[in-house]
Amino acid sequence: MLSLAKIASAHDIRHPTWSVADVHGQYSYTNPHADLYLYLSQWSDMESYLNVGYSRPWQYHLHTNSHLRLINRLADGLLSLHAASPHSADRRLLDVASGRGGAAIHAHRRYGLEVVGVDITPYNAHRATHNAHQKNAGAQVHFGMGSADRLPLADNSFSLAWSIESPAHFADKPAFLKEVSRILKPGGVFTFADLLVVDEVALAHPQIYQEFLQMWDVPYLETFASYHHALAESGFELRRSEIVTRYNLDILNQDCLIFLGLSKPKWLYQTYKRYLYWAKGANLDNVYQHVLASYRALQLGMIDYGLFWAVRKI
Ligand SMILES: C[S@@+](CC[C@H](N)C(=O)[O-])C[C@H]1O[C@@H](n2cnc3c(N)ncnc32)[C@H](O)[C@@H]1O
Image (cartoon, rainbow, N blue to C red; front, side, top):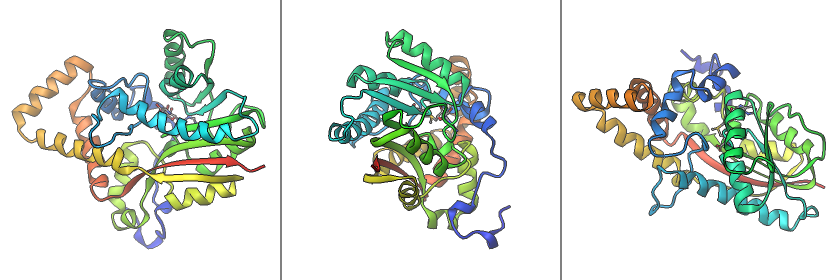
């Protein structure tokens, strides 16, 4: 149980036992939370993309294209800032927490960028390298291991950087912003997407919030406002930020509701459970727990999804 007496903001509510091993487990198929990705892989290429995507009301969401729409949205904003920067001829992008490489490879194929991706999970770094070679991008897109709060890269070495839906997992998000600021040249541009906590809702339902953090192996979340503050403290000038919850998390919320409804008839649940195990090796009970914890938080409006574009101050 949480002691409510000490809680002043959602920042004080944390995953009580979080460690980076949880993150490795989720992304290496060695903890039960990974079963959600196996379930989702029925519709979407989860061996390349690990973000919730972005879709307008008329667009089908549970699909690889929704991941690409989110990536394009971030990239378009980033590259329009880059075009006006003193480093516009530089085509090298740093992808912090590059996952299985889908976004980096797409950045090369669609925008002609050379990409260096860094990730903390060995499975993902290897998978990303394999994917880059399979897509004939191995010479221009490279992946290595490293942690977002201590990146193995030189000061002032990039003019473009992004991090897509990964900071949620970082234990110290201000330290990550300072690292990106260190690596970027003055005038360099940066974009990121992340889950955000809505302070007052989490404070009203701390147990539901904590279950959400535990299910997603997330130590804590920033708010929209705390990210603005942390960006300024890290030497960035914010150019644009937006909350796009209705284009992804609200859709996820509806999908959770449908899943929970379809799980009610026992015969259907048991039949599908056998099928999912046979087809994907995933345990439907784990997926159910994940969906339930997510739905409880999302339907309260506790979690938002933010996009940020910023320039490293000169
Ligand atoms: C939700 S996935 C997103 C991956 C990718 N950006 C995408 O959009 O497909 C989160 C990624 O963050 C990585 N990650 C988590 N904590 C990290 C850290 N401290 N440093 C670097 N990578 C980390 C995980 O291994 C995982 O690949």
